Length: 446
Image (cartoon, rainbow, N blue to C red; front, side):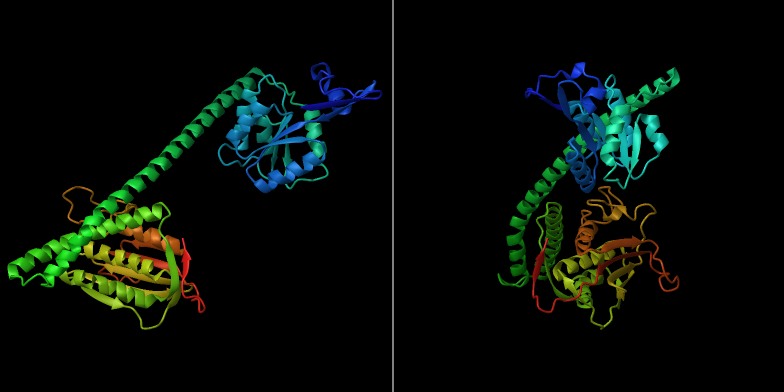
């Protein structure tokens, strides 16, 4: 509470009046003696919406109130204890603790201080507000003309309702519950901050590790290509077979390292996307061309349903192709020899879709969403049949989400039972159609 006094004969200093010796009516209305009292009452407003806070603050300050603001329940409780407001206005729908929980906590913390608490909210139950200890409930939208008077009336009225022993016991227990809830929320916030920090450290570790692995791989790949091209001399059949086997192993390691580098770049916000005009079906055909040899090696029959129609879009075509390749690599990995794969594209309304059906073993019920998590393996044992680090589909999902699209799986696939009777799994992606930019060759977004 801020206090100034002006005498009819002379000016008084700020501390000339002891507020403890004055009644509430004297403080609010002034004293009809030799001086007049001007009061600036302090209002604590707990509200998560910045526009509402700004409006209430403007109204009350224009009418002689001092306003302290808090944007969530926990900070509101702290400010109530630190600033000693004359009244507390609070919203019911707060992001951490709701208004009822905050009121219970405040009634316990402010015991002995008759500070009115008024719910200022468009929602909530008036009887519930009263039950937890609110002195009133002002419903939104706020009446600008009435609000200052409503606040003054609440201060004058105070909270003087009597409680029997059972009600008092219930309120005490509720206050203890609210205190425990606040403590748990603070613990969770601290734990969340620690998790975020550890995730950042982990991402940086993976990025550094990937860089250290990729550096020696570069000359290894170069020399293997020179050997296979017989640039360093002719090879015997046995030597060629050995080098080809080594080359396949190095290629697998390089793919894992590149995926890890991309995942850490996405996680740390260091991956740039370069948008350009592209043709969706062409990206699908190029992606399939990159994987076709692997399908042949495993004896998998590939059926293609990619039309010759041009599906023109705008975005980072290289990243889109990278995501498509991950879906195809997934089919290679889980489709057994003599298996079958169908690759299909289509336009559905304002979306371009890329769908990969395979005749593998399918995805266990309850694990369809899990396959898109980083490092997740359906069979995580060291002796698992299928290789990989669990990065491909996770990377594809993050890329497609940056496009504003979605990646998903179905096992078994939905649709015409006869058409997909042979298929156990469908993994697909869609991206929104963005109109090609005729006058813009390249655009960068991150």
